[in-house]
Image 1 (cartoon, rainbow, N blue to C red):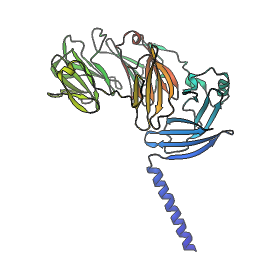
Image 2: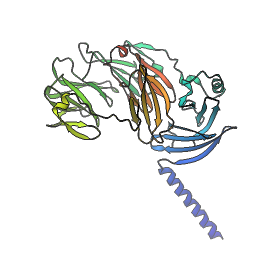
Image 3: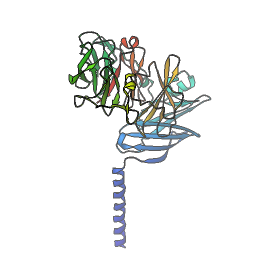
Image 4: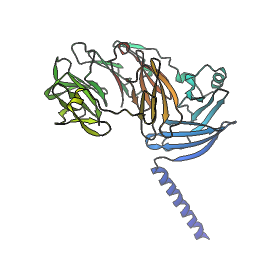
Length: 408
């Protein structure tokens, strides 16, 4: 009997060890559970991916399913959706997910489409219900920050995101903006005279690279600005490059530039501080490398990366992240574009986020989206809604101004 008991203890410890090893080395798991708010039952399917701190949910209540996901490092915990609040009337069915006592996304309301509460305020019964939730703070999704003028730029410094670096090219160089800098805004001068269209300039990784516009008809130097370290340096070409050139695209952290006058393609690598000719053939990329003719190159044929991912009738569709990411969809509405998002995992939960005037100036950084509205750069994130970042008047009047955000 003692021997049997001892063997059972050993087997139990062995079982616990196997479970611990499985848990420790697991990259994620799918579990089902139920939470209650005293009135309602929420049936939860939770899919976790620990490597990128992703938790994806399908939550069903009263035969209505809500799909959403959050990104936060909970270690290897599961069941992090600990509570939820539910509202229903003739117009909306709404759920407020609560994660380990914290609100990471706004209340999601479903009518014909999904919308966040901060975009549909005005329903008196829904407003009253939201205000009755003790943990809910509507100011979390409302921008009340004042702008401060620094280096002739209005900056909403309290809204700047930690370890994000905003680059905006100006007429003589570039503004570099981050709360990590002591003075928040640095104006890095590169040119002696105003350059209203820096056609041969682009952002890549943590760098802004741009041709030496101090020259007139051709150049052999390219400026490189490090957005994080605020360093400005140059790389030099062995041959002169005509200003009648264009940037074809960015592939594998390298910029490809084509000189139309001299019929030469260059590969620029800001990390290695190098610029080299690609060879006798002109390379082209539309998902894989091919070649293009001189005639095509002279027509300023840029690398193609646009894809609608099966979504028709949208003016732009971006896939951000892989299996645990999002599709961002842009649809023309008058003079602006309504922006929607859905989950890659199941293509459900199409939700309206915000409106922007430009689909050409968009920057994705982790789970933040930076965009343009009039003369402002704004940022969207599920945990904060839409917040102002920078007010720069030239954004409204000069469509050649570009911006970009890098996260360190």
